[in-house]
Length: 313
Figure 1 (cartoon, rainbow, N blue to C red):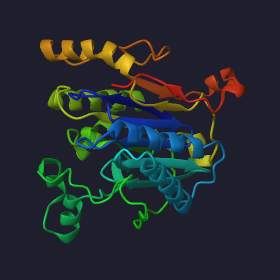
Figure 2: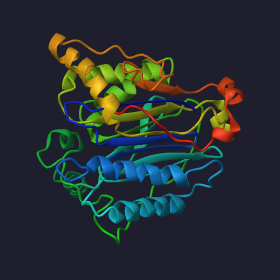
Figure 3: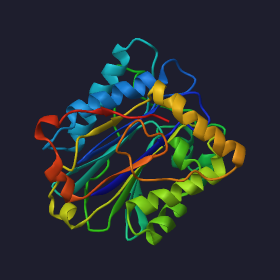
């Protein structure tokens, strides 16, 4: 699976988004703005997922729901009135599973067209389901952020919506993101940019330019993970390319990166997206490729399970 990811604090003081990426698990959590410790909630949720989503985890819809409920209990246990969304895609033996709570989304594409996606747990999505609102109007509705279900609010949380697992075909693609991303990048733009992209890196790069052209890094935090399936994913072979990644907010590196964002605002130009993220201290790189069997041989087995704390934007 050719996978890349990106996260940015946008125009906010801190990044309340967190993500977890490893072969077979791709998770985004969006701590709720306006509530205390949103970044603590999202950080807690991805930490739980990083502990549960290990090599050879036999994913099923029921098991993923159980993982989400474990994350919910962990966020509640913080006792900080912290809330977060969660969305994830999970791959095992050529099958793609997915689930969400809140309004962070997963999109799945086949033949460069959207095959399916998650539904938001929101007032707007309920209105769409009732036929009183068009799906396209969710992005601009003043009620868009009114969520009906999140992690950290209800110890008796029930995840009732079920999504059918998908048998992966070569060339299939997925995109996992927080609302700060899908608010500014339209569904048809995701499809069109995928069709024209040579790989996941190019796909993400073009979408980030679209997002930036509209939000100018002055709006909400935004996070995205996207991947394109290869032949090995169809047959169920899962390569371990490198240590899993857990990315959350880092105040020290946040301060270093804010100057670059300020430059973009002043000069009104697009950021230059690059791929080299060898060192967390490098503040210019912003997305990472997780692809290539060649790096599997370079991995140190004893370091598996180590979750790198990288820069948060």
